[in-house]
View 1 (spheres, one colour):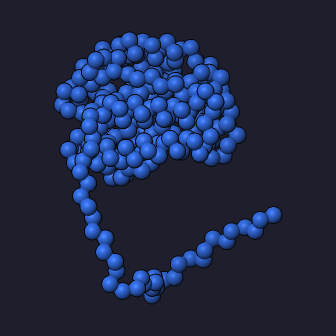
View 2 (view 1 turned 90 degrees about the vertical axis):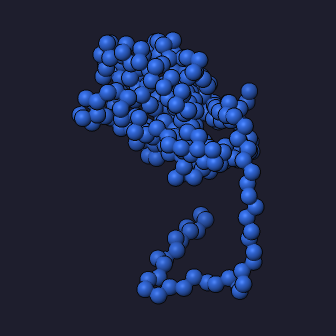
View 3 (view 1 turned 180 degrees about the vertical axis):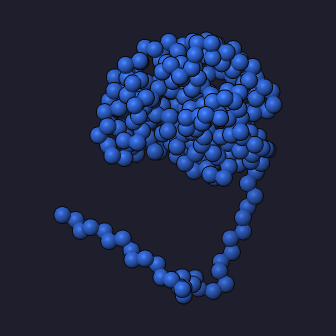
Length: 262
């Protein structure tokens, strides 16, 4: 399939985002708790996928969780403890940009977790997630896939783009030489944690626009019927002509000057 143009992509994305907004209204109305985990290789497109979901949702209802390296205290806790505090409450949507699966991925491959810690994690996770689902949380787990050739191209783009340079870290650069090790770690993770109550869904993100559309369509199709009656809102005309803004104590700063065309 040929690459989507931006206009074609946005035309396909917009109706899905309308559906997401309706789904968010349903989550809030019914007190559901929706949790979406987005995992994948570096540069796969996790941030873009999450942005496509949350872009038009109320930020007070929809939260993105992207935790930094654990503190010394957090490292001594029960492994899932720091993630539990970020789980959704009634009416909330939480999107994990990486999650407890760090232990089965980067922590394992980069040597930050011992073999016994990883084995304990793989054993405990299905039980932990079963408790979440049985308690009523709607849990969706996505793994974003991309070939190493695409990954290399995206790393190079980050290196040359001052707006994306913050995405590069020494860990990311080291991961370049461990592509196969990440594949092995992912397969072991899937084998242990792809369960009936909390299945994984793999999405091809070699083309990120198509990947986002695929993920959103899958998520929407797997949600229950989310239609909620929207009450009509009265919007009568103003009783007088619209007023201009009035200032007393301070004035707005000078407007930005648009540079003249060359």
